[in-house]
Amino acid sequence: MQYCIDHPEEVSKIAKVKAQVSEVKGVMMENIEKVLDRGEKIELLVDKSENLRSQVSKFISYSLKFETWAVILKTALDKK
Image 1: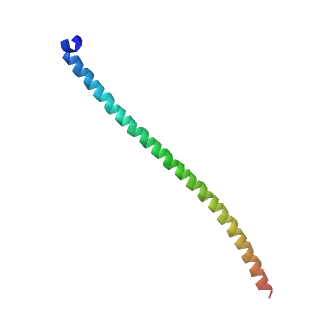
Image 2 (image 1 turned 45 degrees about the horizontal axis):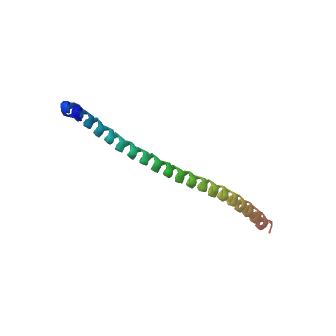
């Protein structure tokens, strides 16, 4: 305690450093929250892209079946 009384300028420096550390800590916490949010958004995008890929695969399969059916129907109609 005597040291604080004898060296008030040092106490001021320590208080300044503590304030800076606190500020940096706050910024880092915000950055971590943003990274976690981005991670969640990336996971959602991955899920959506996988779903889209699955739908595209089904669409291609159905379109090939439809095209085959159309060719068969056209061939049958041309024979008449």
